[in-house]
Image 1 (cartoon, rainbow, N blue to C red):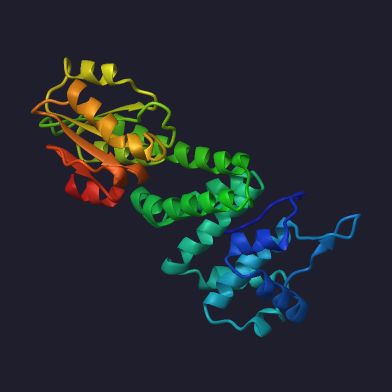
Image 2 (cartoon, rainbow, N blue to C red):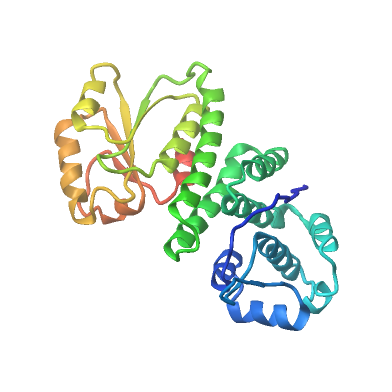
Length: 302
C-alpha cells in the first residue's frame, strides 16, 4: 500500500511539546535526536524562540515509523530528506499502514489540506472495506484528536475540519446503501440523540451498518424531543430506538432521562440500545434495554 504525503508551503509553527503530542515521542528524546543526529532543524522567531514547521513534523512522523520498524536513529540520521519517505513507502505493511495513514490524516488536519485526506482515504479504501477503515483508522484518529485538543495542540477548528471530512465519508457510504430497499422487515431502527448532545459520529456510522444488514433505519440526529419519538410509533411497529450518550444527559440525570423515555416512548414491542460514555452511568436495570460498550458489539448482534 502506498500513501504519499506531500504538501505545499505552510506557515504553521509547532513547539517541541506539540511535536511530542503529535508523534508520541518525548520532548527530551526529540532533542537528543535533533542534537546528536540532526533529525530536525528548528527555526527561531524574531524574539529567538525555537519552533518547528510542518516539514519538521512530517519528517519526525516518518522517522518514528522507521524507528518502530527496527531502524536505528544513528542510521536514519545519515539519510537525506528524499531517502526517508522512500524507505517509509517500502516498509509500509498491513500493520504499519494504519499508523502511517493516521499520521497522514494528522498532517492533513494541521495544514487544513483536504487533498492529503482524500488521497490517504482513497489509498486505504483500495486495500480494505470501509468498515475496516472506520474501525482501524478513523476511530483511533478521532480518539487521538480528542486528546490533542485537550492538551491544546490542536484548536477546535482543526478538530472540526477533520471530523467533517470523516463525517462526509460516512455520509457517502450511507448514501450508497440507503438507495437499496430493506430486505428485513421484522424491526425498524430509529436513531436519535438527546437534547444538547452533539457528538453524532458513532450514531451516524451505526446507521450505515444497520442499513447494510438490510434493516430499515431512520436517522433523526440531534436534539430530538421525546414527543417526536412517541409519534414514530404511529408509523412503525417493533421499533428499536438507538441513542448515544456522550456528554448528555449529565451523569446524575441519565436514569431520570431514561425514566421519561420509558414513560413516554417505550412499549412492550420496543427496544432501546444505548452507547457512549454516559451510558456507563446507568444504575437502574430495565426491560428491553441493551447498553453496548462498542459499536462492534452492536454490529455483531445485528
